[in-house]
Length: 325
Image 1 (cartoon, helix red, strand yellow):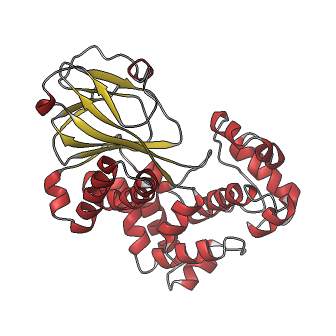
Image 2: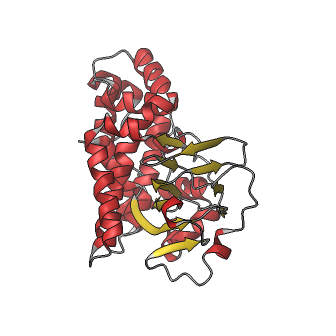
C-alpha cells in the first residue's frame, strides 16, 4: 500500500485553480484565511513579495512558486510595505474568467501569476499536515533539479494561458500532482516534514504504517505492530514517535477517525458499518470517540459536514482503543 496516497485520498485532497493575474505596479492585495486549504502562487512574469502576519516574508520571481499550507492570510505585493486592500475588493467586478487585471502600467512589466489552492475535507488532520511549515518556496532553480515537477508546472501554465475547453479541469487535476511533488521538495525546508516522509520510507516504521492503513479495523497493539516488523516493543514505540510525532496507538486512533470521516461521506454506509470498519466494537463506542475528537456526533456530521470546521479538535480518549504507546 502507498501510505501517502491513502492519506491524501482519505483527507480528500482536491485542487482548484481560481485565477491568473496581470498586476501593474504599484499593486498589493490581502488574501484572506481559507480554512482546510493550502494556497499557491506561481509567478510567470515579474516579481512578487509575499508577507505573513508573523513577520516572515518571501520574494519570488519568474518560475518560482510559494505554497501556503494552512491557508493563512497573507499579503501579495510588488514591494514590501504597500497598503493592501482585501482580495474581495480587488475581485469586485471580476467574474472568475480570464485574467484578473489590476493597474494600467506597462504591460511588459506586469506581474503575471497563476493562483490556486488545494482543499481538504473538513476536520482533515494528519502528521504530514501538521509538519508543514508556514510557507514553502520552490524556486526555478529547484524545479530544474526536478524535471517531473518542472514539466508539470510548465504544462499547468500552458493550460492556464490557453483558454481552451477543458483547460481549467486539466489544471485542477494536475495541481493535485503538484501538491505531492511540492511535499518532496519541501523536505529540505522542514525538519518535521522530512521526518514524516522518512517514516513512510523506513523499512520497519513504514511497514507498520502500511499495516495500519491496510487494516485500520484490526485490533492492533504496540506489541503486535512491533512484532510484525521485527522490533522490540520499546524500540518500535520510540522510533515511531520520533519520526511521526505521535505514538503508534495515538496515530492509530486518529487515523481511524479520519477514515470514519471519509466513510461517513458515503450515504450507503451506516454508522454501525463505519464503526465496524474503523475498529470500534459498537456504534456507541465509535460515537463517543468521534464526538470527543470533532465536537459533534457522526449523525450530526452527516447532516452538515462543514460544521466540523468550526468545532474543537480534541483528541478522543477511548478506553477501548487508547492504550499506552
